[in-house]
Structures are given as structure tokens and as C-alpha cells.
Image (cartoon, rainbow, N blue to C red):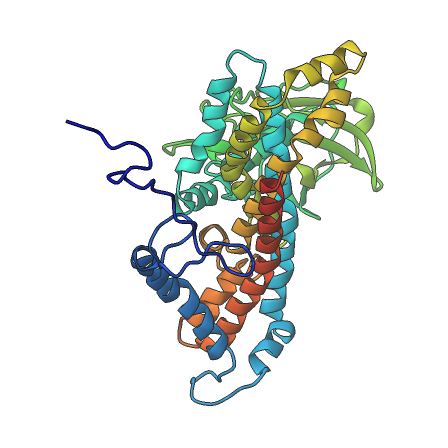
Length: 462
């Protein structure tokens, strides 16, 4: 067997790669129907088509139809021009919704991000930081509906049901005297009468050596002092004015009015004033058995039980009232989303170069200076992501307000998403106004989205 030599008759010509056809710009021609990655356009379109159809059906078409519907009247048959958009700035409920949305956009993302930053930084070095982060993040697993129900109970005005008011009343009663005996009053047969302003006074003057009886009724057992003891009949004292204030009521019956019976309790802590010629000349406070004594100099005065003994107890704050309903609901939102902010910021914090932080500490910077001058500036991209995400989220908040705010305060807590629902459904539905509100929400979201996209592209070019 012989092999062909180079240049001989049986030589195989060398194969050279065919250079791609280039256009005038120097780029390869795409006449073959392939893209830059070598994928045929038809295949790429086939894979993208379902996503494009869904995008058009679920996003593009609703937006286009909402814009179109916002220029029609309530019936949807006539052209209304800009009338629906004028209502956005003339209707009181919609203006309240716009104002509340501004409050939401400013407060809710800022507070959530700030708390997330504080939690992430403070829990970085502690041993149980992971457990704390887990507890803070747990509300994210709860739906807005469930969170709304929880905080509707938390903000209940009755301290025995609402946690917020129970804590508030507890703190208040720690620093201020609690209520005495609300709704307590004498009977017509008792030696007391109304003294004006909610007080009660004795029908006759008092003197030393003659015991004074001050019976009352109308005190519910739950309002009686827990350490009250059975009342004691006052003993006469020639040098002082003695008396007893007690609950003239025997459980199960059998007691006699104006008589201290064995099972009747003293009104511990009730204030007694001796008033002569319109001036208070002496005061006393009843003991656990209701007994009290005044100096003999108070003889000739009438005894008065001031109105402070009978004021209603402090029941806390109306958290869901017109003035506090929006901050209260924002508090529930922060409770849910502070954990989200904390997790993202903690992830960014884990990626910071530790040598910079240590170098700053070696140079004499304290922890506050390290946090303010190094940690926060280096976390700026992460903080921007969290802040923008929460801003977009609060613009569409709806269920928290709808569930937490009672009917009497829902107008004061109104936001655009809730107003969109109220305008679009119900007996007086006006889809033209509802569509205009939807377009307004879209216009409010677009600048935030544009800022986010620009930031992402800028980060990608680095």
C-alpha cells in the first residue's frame, strides 16, 4: 500500500473553515435564522410564546382596559372625559385615601427597614441571634387576613380582651391612682344625698362622739378591693369623729339597710372630706374595714365623698379611633415585615469585608461611628432594595385596613387600594372611578419601579 504524498495526484486538499458572512458593521450575518447563542429564532419564539400570552392576558390587557374604562361613565356606555380623574381630587374619601397612602409610603417602609437594620446589627454577635431572627421573621408566615384578625383583637378597647390596652392600663395604673368605686351611690333611705358634680354629702352635720355611717350600693364585686375585709361598726370616741363607709349589700339577701351586717365589706381607700362653710377642713381615707376618723375640730361640718371616688376606671386608648387607626394599622404592618427587612439586611451584612470594620476599630472608632460611617454606607444597596420593595408593597395594602379598621373608622383609615375596592363593588359601584384609581396607583408605582430597574442595571455594570 502506498500513501499519497503532499502535492501528489492523490493528495486530499486541506479543509479551511468558511468565514462567516459579515455585514457592513462587521457583525456576523443572521441569515441562517440563528441568534447570537446559536438558537433558532423559531424555537426561541415557541418557548417564549406561552409566557408572552400570559403576560398579555394578565398584565397588558387589564392595564389597557383600565385606562380605557377610566374615561367612561358609571354605566360604561358614555364618554366621561376627565370627570373620573377630577373626582380623585375633589371627593373627600378619595383625598383621605391619597393622604393616608402618603403616610403609609413614608412611615411603613422607613420604620420596617430601620428596625430590620437594628435587629440585624444587634443580633450579629449574640449566641441566640438565630433564634431571635426566627421569632422576628415568623409573622411573615402569617397571611394578611390572619394578621388583621390578630391585631383587631390586640387593639380591642376592652382591657380584658385587648392586649394593647391591657398593657397601657397596667402602666397607667402603676404611676397613677386607679379608679375607686364607679357607679356607687346611696339609696334614698341612706343618710347621704347628692352633693353636686358627682359627689355625695351627709344629710346632717357631724360631731365628735357620734359615729357616722356612710353606706353605699352599686359596687360590683369585681370592683371591690381584693384585700377588703368585713366592715366594722364604728365605736364612739369623744375626742374624734369616727365612722364607717361600707357596701350596704349582703349577698344572698338578709341584710338590713343602714346597718353594718357581718358579710358586708368595707370600702377600702374611699376618700372622706369634712366641709364647713364651703371649705375642706379635714380629710380621711377609709381602711380595709371601711373605718375612718377625723379630728374633733371638724365638728359641725358635713362629710363629703368627693366625685373622684366614683369616676370611671381608666380603660386605655381608643387605638382604632379616628386619630390613631392609621398608625395602629401601620404598626401591624411593621410587625409583619420587619422580619423580611432584617433577613435581607443580615444577608448583606454577612458579606461586608470584616477587615474594614476591624481597621476602623483599631484606628479608635467606637461602635456608633463604625455603624454610621462604614456599615450603613456599605449596606446602602441592600437598604435600597428593601426600601423600594416595601414601598411598592404598601401602595397596594388593602386587607389589613379592611379587617382591622372598624366600620366607624374605615373612612379615616382609607387608602387607595381599599377605595378602589369600595368604588368598584357594591350597590353604588362606579367602575369609571375605580379604574381611575387603578390608573393612579399604576402611575404611583411606575417611578418606584423605574428607580429600581435603573439601580439594578447600574449594579450590573459594576
